[in-house]
Length: 103
Image (cartoon, rainbow, N blue to C red; front, side, top):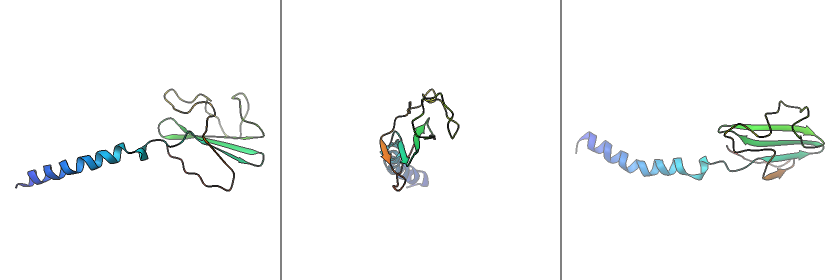
């Protein structure tokens, strides 16, 4: 068996494994965001676009899009192809809990 044949056989065996890795749910977003409420301060973190996160921080009440925030705010509706919209989130945590989110 020549070296090319061995290489082709190894590549053929490896393709299903590599394909399973790239199609697994690990690479899919697992959250629409989380809201961290600690005292009077609130932070919302959301996936933003394809490879970023949007962070919004405010005191006392959620932003409506017309006020000054502690951090620079991107538009409420998100970029053109974003999946995050407005202030949606699926998890509420306090300042003492851990949370993992991927985009």
